[in-house]
Image 1: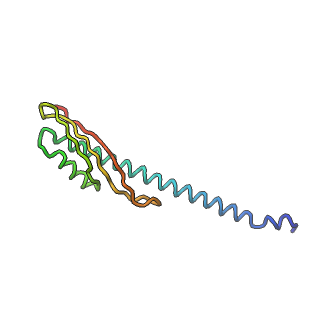
Image 2: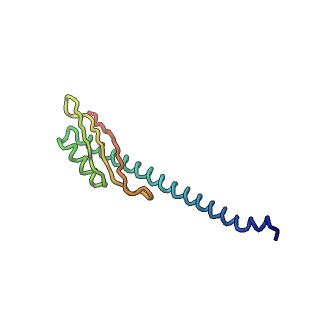
Length: 123
């Protein structure tokens, strides 16, 4: 074995370990990003459902925000804001809600996800 080839002995191991670490880092980043996107989409879906439930009560009862709070709680979220705007007849209007949901993300830990949605009831 020549002196130059003896100096290169074991360099492939270093390259394989380095490449393996890059692959693991990329996979971890992908999983964490995917989990965050899914958490945001689920929270937005809960907000949409909650806003539609609140808007559906307009003109029927005065408890639109109460219904929205119950729907949010049943889906693991907290209603942080509920604004109901009625038209002059009181039979139609809109509901805008904001909610917060705690989610557990890989690597990042527990985070708060916020979402806002609006729903309308037409006459």
